[in-house]
Image (cartoon, rainbow, N blue to C red):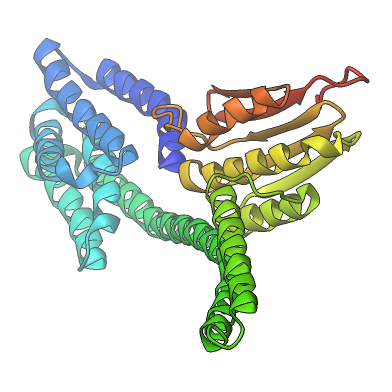
Length: 363
């Protein structure tokens, strides 16, 4: 869609200017100008809808109008350029067909030639010049543009496949993050539950023969369960101690797997006491980029005062609700820092700044 819109912004002024020039040069009176303008408008409408990926919704009316105006130009207005509507819309519609694309392309060229030949039947005096101006040139131009549109359409298909692949990579990256979370949860609970099972079996076995030892085993089971509950809550709320360097490597791997170019810049090292909060923000921001942006560039800057993460590809029409970062803001403030989340156009910025003795920030 971005490529289509880029083509729209680049070519629409040229198409519109060409249409105005065509009407101005070939219209012999005001009603000729109106009819020829309708053909130009049909071509422009088809082009705009193609840029939105919806050309097939207007294909039939635009082609009918373009064909009618071409017949009018050949039979009545003596306008060899009145096939411009067909020249614009036809090559855009033909590659979008699911079947018989080649047949449709040939049919379009033949139609342009046959309609243009009406000039030869109505005014045979200038057969040679009219043959060139109303049959050969229009049919040849239509054939060339249709021929160029087929590889162009294939190119868009390749781009679409790459975009789909990128989305799948992002989904897989999120799934890998969930698997990693599950692994952390297993590390916390798996060993503890196994130990609890063994101690409970031992306490049951010695309950009558050694009640003092059985009571001690039960106290240890209770302590293990309480500790595991605390670690599980810490993991669920992101309060588990994290390693910033490991999180940087993990974020880089996840984002690069999703197709983004990641740059990590260092201008000093943050206080180790901030490592856990910075790691949580980095992990949450990485997840947000994977879910809500189509990032091509991600820059992570570390400094003595904190960290800043910027990415492109943000949707400027729909700003997502980032509950995770909103929840982390309070923890950052409690830790003596500030969490800044802002968007400018398609660039999204997340920055964590702490009060630093060196008074420097990541940027």
